[in-house]
Image (cartoon, rainbow, N blue to C red; front, side, top):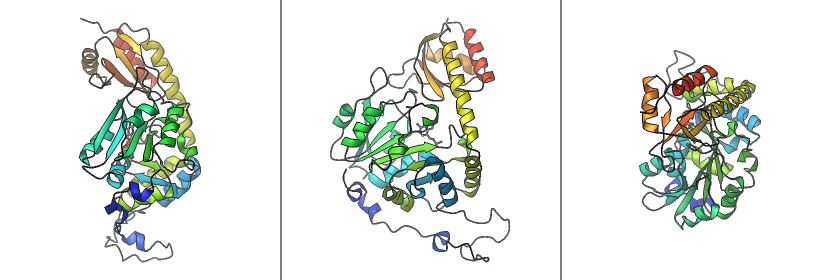
Length: 347
Ligand code: PMP
């Protein structure tokens, strides 16, 4: 791996970060706070939140079995995706490599940051090889994006190939594990200390059932996390979000129950879809959604909208012609979808 200084944009490496009032006084003994130009009325919402979210990070660190200093928390994992570009990619000069198809925000963030985005197409089983991916890199490639289970294909990427990339690539490897809770594959978090070039993304939006609070996690070496902390907005995770996250972390056993039910429902949907006349092929899934090739994605999508049921039409995505992406819902919701599709007629 190149040194972190070589991988970081020079202006970011030498950046002196903004220092907020809450950064400067970290004690708990004081009782009179006249340092941050806050309003003394309307507690508790009058006070700025902890800019480094230590209570959330300390609790999360125990659950995830990492050092709290290896955690970055952001406004969704989308914030972390944007930060990796801003920290490491020189606009107009550097590039990144990603599998294709995959989660759309990697390319959007690359485009916003004027960074070349190189796509390497998955094979017909939606798998990749490290060799093909690495062949697309050059001396200006700073990041490789892998998403496992992958969105929109739903499958886990080969662990062996992921590790090959981690061992061979001299830049940083972002592994997006937004849907890992629904997979049998172990998270790469356990290997964080083995790979100094690894950044693992996870989110509260899926298994944790908290898409509304906007809380994403990035796990990496303490050095990489320090760079994110330096360039993030000072109070990037608001107090209401931190409070709700702590509450969720204290009842994390419930997440296991939801995940178990959703995996069972995924199996139910897949087996029922197999009997539908409009189904052409169901792609195996390790996530809380699955991709299904149908007779006519556009027509079926529009028909379902008419029935008040919204799925995602992925017809225009590469390798996903005539595919719909179906999120697993409750049994009642899933039965409504199945019922509607049983009544659908190709015309
Ligand atoms: N990564 C993947 C693979 C996703 O599918 C999504 C959301 N659909 C995200 C990240 C973004 O999650 P968040 O809500 O944490 O921004």
